[in-house]
Image (tube, rainbow, N blue to C red):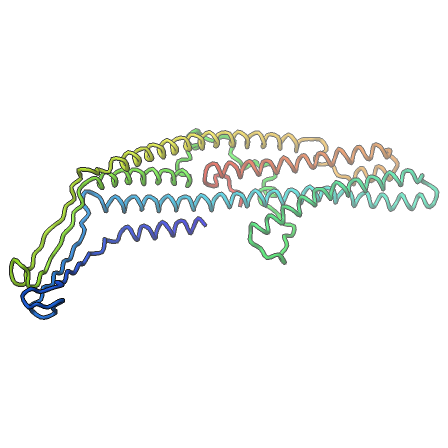
Length: 378
């Protein structure tokens, strides 16, 4: 749709560059009193042919073209901004899909471990070495883990469906598990800039702001055009009069000029001036809002990075369920202690994954605010 807007603006620019067509008028004598004939087509009949061509003056054509050129620039910048925003939306969606996969994988680790414990407990219960109550507790733990995992899998299915729609994939194509950059190569986001100079917060080259600047230029050219339209309208004409009254086969050239006495285009000039001021104010407000938004998103990125570093420094971050599994099977810890360890590990892993997700989203949001990928996430 944005591309169609550009093509439409370019088509209007092509039209504005065209000159007005010349006008041809033909006047034919109905009754010739000399020959006494109606519509006399002989050499004695009178025929008057007139050709006229309008000539724009004072910028009446030039400002129209410049105005439309600025409109084309605005449409082109808006298309670039639409493309960039769409790409950032895709990055956000892919990141969300990836980290939902990571959360579901946390439950896979625990469920597989619980299944191994459950197999061993059932064997011990059949031999009479273990209470069936302990088996029931492990079964309940597995059921709870499967239920929580299904919640994440449901969200994952919805996000994959959104991703498939956004990529315009056929319904027979499914999105499988994939890896996303940054998470593996830079899990802590340490490659993110820890400090940006204040000059880097300038976003004047962002496509949407450039589009507003082009619209402001178009409004300025429109104001000049309306002032030019207040000038007289000039036209050149040539006339050939066969058997005219002045002389035989009269040919003459002349000009037409409107007199701007009653209409001097005051209303359109005032309206164009107001529109020009409005767009300039809108562009200034958008610039300030973009600068403020960039600063806020940068501060959010720094906060999310600090949160992730703190989460990765937790004592359970590098711990694995296999350790608790071995301790339980060796009777070194009780069932309640085992469940507490599982819950603590799972919450820690989910917290780390969510912190990584928020850090990624903060980086994407900052890139969007700048209008360029100052943080590479490819």
